[in-house]
Image (cartoon, rainbow, N blue to C red):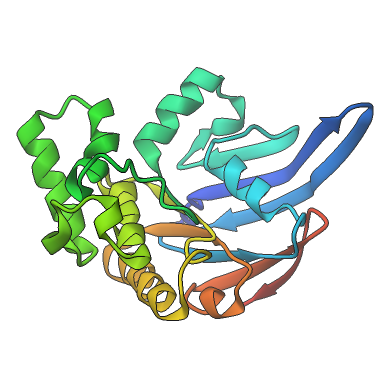
Amino acid sequence: MGIAERPLPLVEIRELSKVYQRGREAVEVLHHVDLAIPDGDFLALMGPSGSGKSTLLNLIAGLDSPTDGSLRVAGRRIDRMSSGELARWRAAHVGFVFQFYNLLPALSAQKNVELPLLLTHLPAARRRRNALIALELVGILDRASHKPAQLSGGQQQRVAIARAIVSDPTLLVCDEPTGDLDRHSAEEVLTLLQRLNRDYGKTMIMVTHDPKAAEFARRTLHLDKGTLVEQVA
């Protein structure tokens, strides 16, 4: 009987670097980062301002391309994709949750959640059904017909999370998802993210400056000056 092969990580990063050009100056934001993220992980990325955590998140999400190194997600080298390929890949595989909810004010919660599905070939009835299922999953189905101005900050973020998961993405990336919320609403949103990870196996990467928010993740990584410096179990 042979030795069982270990499953490949969902996200595999090797020697990843990112350099931005500011005038004549080259600024290295990430320096030879190695990182493996298994399927079903909930990872918090922490670090001071300018440490590279949001840059790393954007690279994993296919919003930017690295200067050097390799970046593989779900078995695909996304660092080798063109901008058009990356756009199609993001639409199929990545759900986004940001600090500010980015909901369209003229649309109801249901219609906001449906937006990613407009890029698919699903008929209107199926889009509506999937949006309502996502709203129910985040505990806000009773607000489906409400517009953003009629919702609290915590409720708007729940709608944003429903929008992020409605297409069943491979990966959920969250950039300071509680940064605009009061403590009570923040804990409700973090508990929801934790439940999506625990009960539905959603793989999540969350950038946060808040140690209390990071406690909801399965593990925490710290960046400083573009380098991973510490791992907390």
